Length: 490
Image (cartoon, rainbow, N blue to C red; front, side):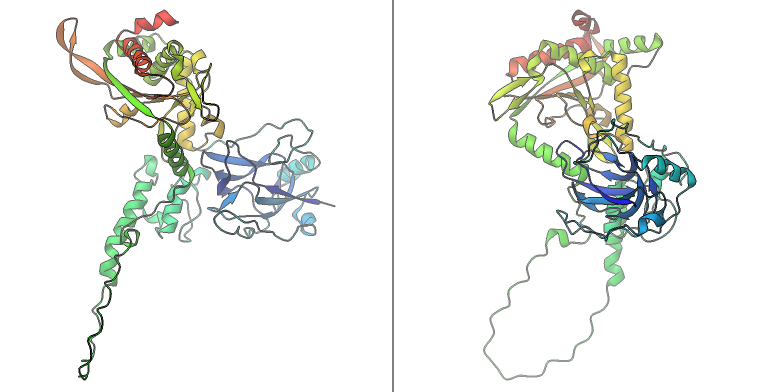
C-alpha cells in the first residue's frame, strides 16, 4: 500500500523565510523521481528549482503560481510506493491549508490527473523505495547525497514556446508571452494589463517592466475621458422659511497621493525588497566616507589589448580591475574586513570574496567570485561571465549572492563618471569605476589627449582612517596608469 508523504517548502538558506511560486513543473497525478525538480520559486535572492526528496505519485499541490508561501508550508504530497495515479487515489489525504504571513494559503491547485508515461513510471518504480540523501527542512536519510539537477534555460532567441518564456495568461488568452520576470507578470496582473497586447522593447521582443508601466500610464490617461458624463439635471429647490444658518460643512479631505490616477504602487518584495532592506541597514549602521581620483588609463587599455592579442581566452576590463583590487587589498587588508558590533571588534578576513554589481531585468544583484585573490585575470574573466549570465537568466543560487568581502562597482557602463555608492553590508568598502573617456591630460610634461577614468572608494570609517583609504586608492590608480606596478606584487 502506498504511503502518502507531505513535502514542505524547504529552508533555502541564508535566512530566507518565504518564497513565491513562479511555475509548477509537475501536475497532480504525475509520477516523480527522487530529487526531481517539482516547482520553481523566487526568493529574495534568486530563482530556485526545488527538488522533491520522495519518489512516487503527486496527489496534491498547494498554492497557485504567484502565491507566496513561508518556509515550512506544505508544497505537495506524494504517494510513495505507487507507480500509477490510481494506486494513490485511495491513500490521498484531504487537502490541508497553511497560514502565510500575508494571507491564508490557497487550497491545492486543481489539475487534471495525467497518465504517466512508461519512462517516468519506470523511473518512479525504481526510485519509490529510494530516499534522497539531501536534507531539506528535516527531510533526509542515510542514503548518499543525491546530486541536484538543474534544467538549463532556453535562450531568449529560442522558439516562443520555450518553457522559460511560456507563462500563465493574464486575461485567459492562450499562447506564449515573451516575459521572463515574474515581477513584470505580477505588475501586469495587478493592473489588468494584457501582456499579449504589448510589444516588448527588450532583446528578442522581451516585455520589460517599463513596457508594462507605460501601458498602465496610457490606460490611466484615457480612463477619465472614457467615464466622464454630464451630471443629471436636478429640480429647483422649494422655497423654505428662513432658518438659522447651519454650520459650514468641513472641507473634504485631500485625496491620498496613491489614490490619484496614474499612481503605481510597487511592492517591496523579492529582489527589490532584499535590496531595500540591505541598503537601509547599511546606511543606518555604517559611517561611510568616499574619496576619489582621476587616473590615466591609456597604458592599462594598451596592456589589455596586448594580452588579448597574444591568443587564448579574452580578458575583460572588469577582470583586470579585479586583479588590481586583490593586489591592493593584500597591501591594505583593513578594507577586506567586517565589523562585529556585538563583540566590538574589527574582523579582518584572509580570503577576498569579490562581489560585483550587475544590473538585470530582475533588479540589481551582486554575485560573488570566491577566492578572487587566488585567481588569474583569465580565471576572473571567465567567472565574471558565468555569474553575469546566471544573473540575467535568474539562476544564481543564494550561495553565489552572499558572503562577499569587497565589492567592485563598474558604473561606467551607465555612461557616468562618478558615484558615492552605499556599501554592501556587512562589507567595509566598495571600489567604483567610472567611464573611460578621452580627455586633455598632461603627459610627460605636455598636454595630450588621454583615456581618463575616475575611481572612487567608499569605505567604512570604523575600520580605517583616510590615510589607509587614500593609500589603497592611490595604489589602484598607480596600477591603472602604470600596469607594470602590479608586477611587483605578483
